[in-house]
Length: 119
Image 1 (tube, one colour):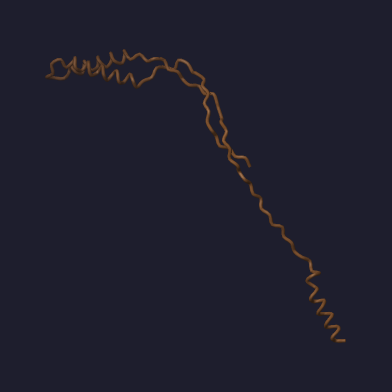
Image 2: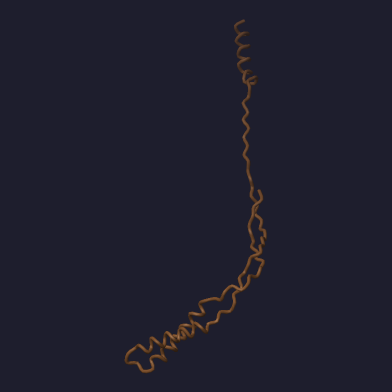
């Protein structure tokens, strides 16, 4: 009888894991893919239009100032004439650096390519 009891207990011991509750754990991961695509985006911008700048006043002012400076240099003959010419050239160069006033604005369409992403 001892052999039957031991054999039964041994058989139950081997089959016990089959009756045990199994532990299952779900494993998952969310992956978001970003797919690039290019869009053309256009907008209307105001472009200033400048009026012509009259440089006559700049040349005349430079010539007058250059003439006065040239006349005040001691020992120079006709220094005023040379100073007026140099002053006129400098006044003209100064006038090239300035722009006239804004007369009107023109509307212009400008487009750019923009990269956007779809998830």
